[in-house]
Length: 405
Image 1 (cartoon, rainbow, N blue to C red):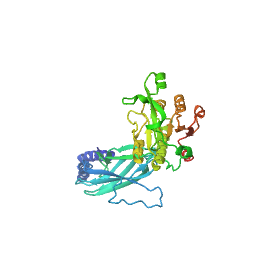
Image 2 (cartoon, rainbow, N blue to C red):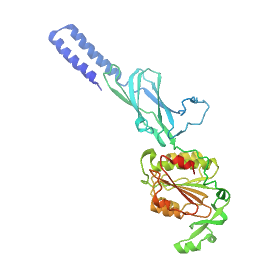
Image 3 (tube, rainbow, N blue to C red):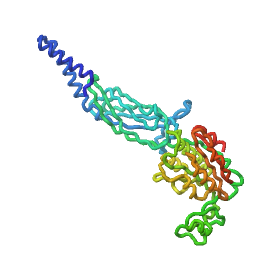
Image 4 (cartoon, helix red, strand yellow):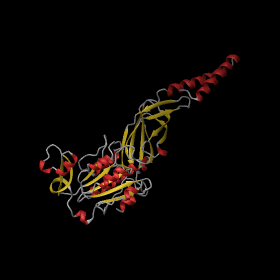
């Protein structure tokens, strides 16, 4: 596409040709032919100049301490780099020209969707790129928010040579990055480490002798396990759940119901719940305590099995609150566990009632209300059930509160 400069030269050549035709002065014809020849050469050179460019992308973590030297990549290192929220990252764009003609004055925009708003658009410019030559451009930004992000194709443009014709091309540069949520490396949880709680056996569903709860009848359940009082009250078969005294269990409950998060972006109450879940998960996995996540979502329902550290981070990095089942219903069918943490993104009266009904022998429950200002809702402050502790945090003070638990 001709630029304004090309149109100006074309108009000038037309004027000079008219003058030369009227005056029959030879040197005006020469200047006119030179301008027209320049336009033709520039048009031919620009056409297809960008089609031979290939692009690739490399992601590298950056040390947060400027005095610490950046680690060198070992050629035998098979571990992929990991990135968490707020981690600095270095991104290199590598361009290689495979065509015959050199690419001149190549520019474009890189869309870095996981960066902060002011760093999403990253401009780049390459002055010359000869055949077989590789040119690398590097920029740094920050992993602003957890999630899975894919890089789109790069849109290249050039006005070279001479700035007379504007040419464009789209180059595929596939890439994907998984950003894990930020977390606080919780080393102590005094509420869980109380002597009377630590000394008692964990209450897992099994073949023990202690009744720890009830649930609906399932095919294969023994008739000896039927809880007749609950069956008579509900009109449906209800069976007892017994303890299994092998090991402790740690359960974190997430509210995955859609549209119940307060705030937007990384400082919403739901995103804070994700960071809290990762922090509690860090504690449980470091102490070798079986960790389970509980939530209800058509796409992001947590696995029923205990999760390891990296399995937990992978789930929390990708999950979204797109569920339809209220948190109160999730709490009503909560599996047996020694210690339960309920992360509440938006307080509701039904949740308060469900928390009050969670009390069971040997279970310690921590209900964390996440509010924009960190103030505990009045209905929640009235909860005084045995084995239930209520705390409130905000997206800005959650680390301080968790550290003091």
